[in-house]
Length: 89
Image (cartoon, rainbow, N blue to C red; front, top):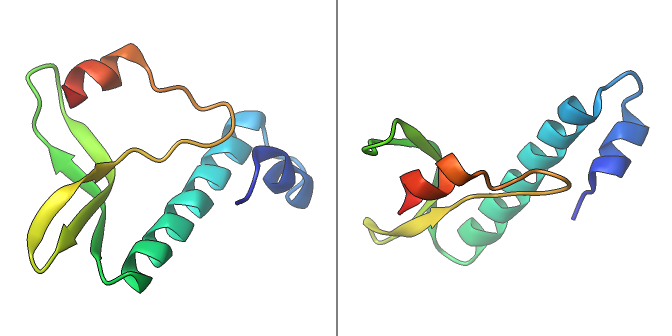
C-alpha cells in the first residue's frame, strides 16, 4: 500500500492535502483491482442521495449485478468526518 509520505516524496511541490488525495486515489485503484481479481464488479464514485446531502461512495461493489455494498477508502491522515458518517447511516 502507498503512503502519503511516499507520494509526497515522489512528487515534489505537492501540499500534504494534494499528496494525501493522490495516495487515496492510488489506494482506491489498488482496492478496485483486487476486488475485480476476486470476481467482483466495481464502480467508482457512485452518487447516493442522503437526507443530509449528496454522498459519493468511493467504491461500490457488486457480484452478478447485485450490489453488495460500498467502501469509503481512507489513507494517510484523511478523516472520516462526522457529516460523512451521518450521511452513511
